[in-house]
Amino acid sequence: MLTFLHLSDLHITTMDAGTQFDRDVKIRQALLDDLGIEGRTNFDAILVTGDVSYHGSSDEFARAKAWFEEVRTKTNSNPEALFVVPGNHDVNQKTVFESSALWDLHQALRDANKSPEDRLASLEAKLKDPSLDFLAALKEYNAFAQEYDCPTSCKELAWVKFLNGGKTLQDGTVVRFHGLNSALLSDALDKKANLLLADFQFRHFGTDGRYVDVVLCHHPHSWLIDGNKANDRFRTQAHVVLSGHEHDARCYNEGGSLRVFAGATHPSRHEGPWEPCYHVLRLSVDTTTIRELSVQVETRVWREKDQRFCKELQGDGAEFHTDRIPLKAWPRPAAAAQISTSANPTVPVSSPTEMNAPTMTPDVFAAARRKLIVHFFRVGTLSRFQAAINAGVWEEGDDAFDGQERWARVFERAEKNEKLKALWDAVAKEDHTLAGQINPFTKTL
Image (cartoon, rainbow, N blue to C red; front, top):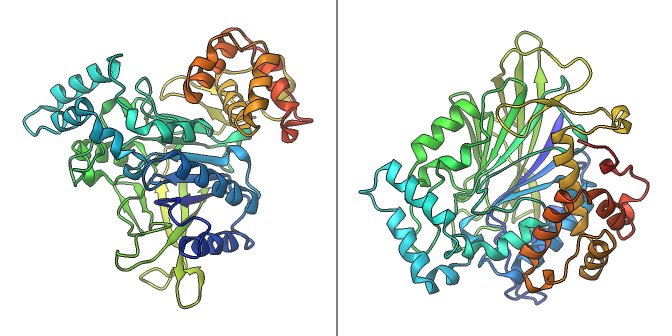
């Protein structure tokens, strides 16, 4: 069984932080206390479906990062467990408003007279245009998300990731996470059916029976211009779809995929009913009769009267929402799960014993690279500089770039020049949690 924590719509601000007027502190502390209960720890993944911040500012993301570290520590989850996608509140709306080019582009892409083909062609041209930073309003979000290797960029709007350590469901089925950016066009004029995903974000989708596909997308498909097309993808190529935004916790099955809508961790007190909540998902595979994915969703809701989070019962009185999703028949791997970073090529994941082998598959390499990135950002800024210098991947002029671009260049250079092994060793000297762990880059592709 794999267990995931689903959080959404935290809306973290620095307004009144550290004062008696910061009323959300007790909610976050109560959530931490609730997570400490047996059965809600050791999460295999912490999945955050957007609206981490309220205004998309760097100080809000810094506060969010500190709280996520509390969540990780309280639940004894690995540093690499957190995966995140952006929401509309993670967009710095001031940046959009002050850029007439960006504002005009948003409205042009929303033009109801545009055909889907014209809209896609126009978006592609703008994403490739070096004179316009199409994702400028997500700059602070991306600096935050980069530390979890989950940024969104003009070159790669969506991401696909896997669990660390080769974790699989009990029959060897690999869980594949897809992170989508539904906040591309987010601005002050957001409303239903005027946001956009675009076909580019479904590049990694597929229907391979060796995977269970879990999608993270902040906005439900009804908020998207291309929502019907996106929903078709969800129905046919996803097993579980996690969303936020509407602050209405609910679960239902549509076309063979389970939709899990999060209640907000911090909804506005002007909303009604005001009910902070979060989800715990437990996934397993049942082959008793036919091969099925069994999903159990536990909803935990804040009760003002009790001053704590409590289990929310389902409409039929059940303690959990349960769903069984048919999986395609497949030949179970003989020794190890199969994993792929795309819908087509497939390569084996090494078992712990095989990790000492002299070769590394592309996907094991990608997982190791992500772990290195996460731990690299866990050390202080000075330690990062020192690690990059010691590994021989720092070049004069790198400090002319901002943090996100600077470190992206360092990692690209380390990979290109086959210096990831040296960078791992340099980071391990700064991060004691890597001490004693085998350097995965001692193997070759």
